[in-house]
Image (cartoon, rainbow, N blue to C red; front, side):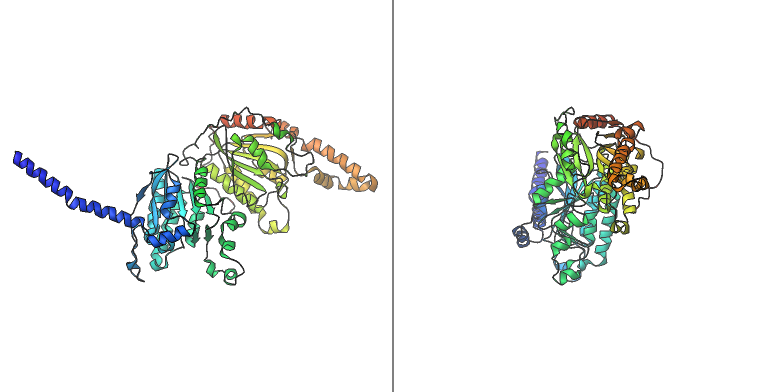
Length: 535
């Protein structure tokens, strides 16, 4: 027995120090090669340009030592154009899962050092696997984009793989939070994929999105515009409305993504993370007593009202440079994440226009998909009049806003600070659209239109019948009567369209109490495939 045991022991020892050790060495070597991406020179060139590599970016995004990579050894299958000589492990994308502040997430980062980050068939399939795993696991997905569109060398298989990716991303929409971080030039269908996310963050210096290559744009070819003016971060933040935030550097981009994610649950069937701040709900808002000017036509900054009311004054404004006449963003009240929608009186007097309606509608639906209550700060004189707005479809786009509010089943709270006129009053989460808690300050006016305009319509003949010297006095008396009969917030309260008229100092207390009561709100909706929002 002793001899047999010794032989067996020797055999095991020999096996461990032989082929197994060689395989482990091969594995270590293969992984080290995968980490090199397109090679040391290309990785260093990326760093010299001021950008991070794919692995740098994932390291900045995730908690230390939490990243688990998948599909490390995937390579492309193309055999033409000498591409068979340029096989890189991972095929130009680093993918896997890890944690952010202890929360599980799936993520991927395109590797610009491999074929310029272009999306070939296997590259797309690798991302698709991560998207599918995130959906099955019900955890958020973070996408780091830096690639020049679909890989021409792969031909139609590259488009096929991309199509599968797009299909899975649409399937994830509204089920798990998706955040895109664009840190390099992203062109073609890849830009569409990035735009499918709930939120898109662009790096100021290098983040670019183009559906068509700038080389195909006449203004670029003629030298009239540079690439940044066509698809750069500032353009997408102020004109296209694609970028919700701009990051000054790549590490800030990761921090912004984590900050957004902190307000969202892991999936649609979970509640947002509750984080008590220590800011008491009883904190009075004395500063709000003087925020609204006595002159109804004078502007003020609604973001200051929001910051006074929310926990610790912390308000993450989104799409700040786009459709500035409406403010949207994320905050907490009583520790609970809330989505804020507010008219901005200092821009276009807070009127709703096409871009503002689109901006707010998408945000409302995003919050509703992930059980985040909506708090509306209202001061709106109406929809912006004009031929450009009418020709541009303000009716259709304004209806999106009304539709989004009416469709939302999360708790809906509305505070009217000053004006709430006409169709815009109805579109901004009014009681008639099943808003849960509607209150107003004593300065509020709820009416079909402003008193001046209403008097000019209703009493035009009466005003014109008096002597010209007396007309202004008559008009002002009629305006005063109209405000008492129709514009006073107590008139609306008597009809049940407001739940209360409150002093501004009570604003935080009243809203936080309502949120506590509505925390377990459930709303039944009739069975149907889906509604037909006027897109």
